[in-house]
Figure 1 (tube, one colour):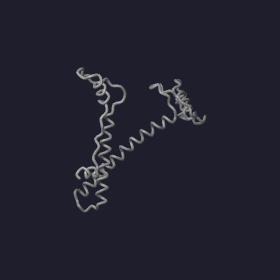
Figure 2 (cartoon, helix red, strand yellow):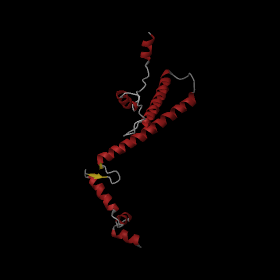
Figure 3 (cartoon, one colour):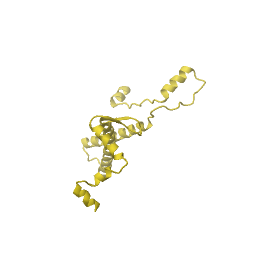
Figure 4 (cartoon, one colour):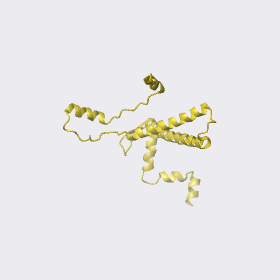
Length: 165
């Protein structure tokens, strides 16, 4: 049979796939060879130049994003477990309470940062409706500041204490 003949010739199933007649595999193999030799290729779908370093950067970003999500889920589960086990129990040491509170703070900050990243808009967007009653300078100022939101800075214990004095 054909499979036995391929084995005796030294070929395997993969060799048959490359020789399918459409040349797609040959083109891809050529692109892979160019990348491994330090060259660059042009992505047909986006038209961008792709090098091995850009592929590594994209892969690293995707990995870090997935890892961050995984770590946050793990932290959230740990906090839930500790809440179920210890609840409002006062048998925890001060160090354990601080560690749990720090975990909650990290989780809260990460969720808040995630919301901010979702709110960011990249690229050009049509401006909002212009109020003709305002002067040109006021319209320009409002257009410049409408996209940016100042972060609300929480006051530290030190700042609160200084204000109370």
